[in-house]
Image (tube, rainbow, N blue to C red; front, side, top):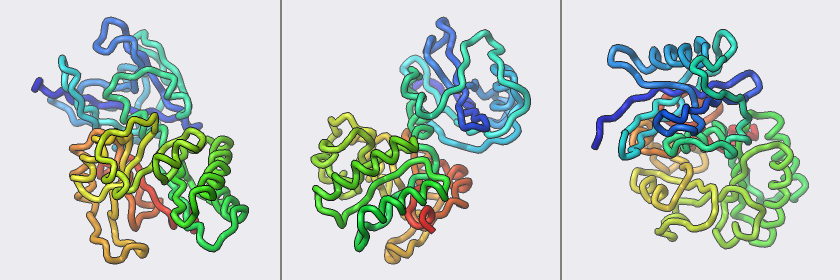
Length: 314
């Protein structure tokens, strides 16, 4: 294996949530593709020092607030890279293309229209999903109208970036009906939607993401051929490896902390989240006993965000 090149990468966000992209020159490695600004970490500096220096050199800003986002290791064949990605939420000065490169501010929903190096795909996925996934509450004993109002209230009252529609109490036809209504809501709000259902039901629904439980994923055993933005529930390293083989774009890792819904489940803890994140090349979302106050700790332990039910409906 070739020597690993450690690269500090900045996902720069403005006050409106737009993301700064730059385009590599044609004569560079992966030339002509779009990327998130950054560069090689020198032997004499920390990754944070490299991040600040590279952003000054490339786009003329001084990062003043940033936090860990995701780490990605990728072997291109001619070069092996470790992308150490940080979200930059505050900076001085106005970004400028200091090296003559193309530069654009884009919204999350526009990222799919840009071509990135393969190693950047996990960054794009994490940005499209965001850092707060709302798993919808039980549908038992509630009418559709009231349920949809509950979902819309959660979207207004909480910082939610994606929704997983989980409704195991509904029969197939009712699930499809309710899922279509939730799809219509997300079309208006711009939230990423995942259906927690079987592949057979998924095929009957408007195009969105597909979420598989660990049990359902295990029953498949081979890469999914559907054109699906796929998330999978995992509880250990073995299930994570299986999810990646299935073609998962992201995974949920749980339970991180003790939960009321599964009091007998043994929490894996933040150290295990960190350990798995270091050997996993797709985004991880921490789940189980967490609230929005835990997002920073999730970032610090290698996760791209959190997922939950009660934290978004309280």
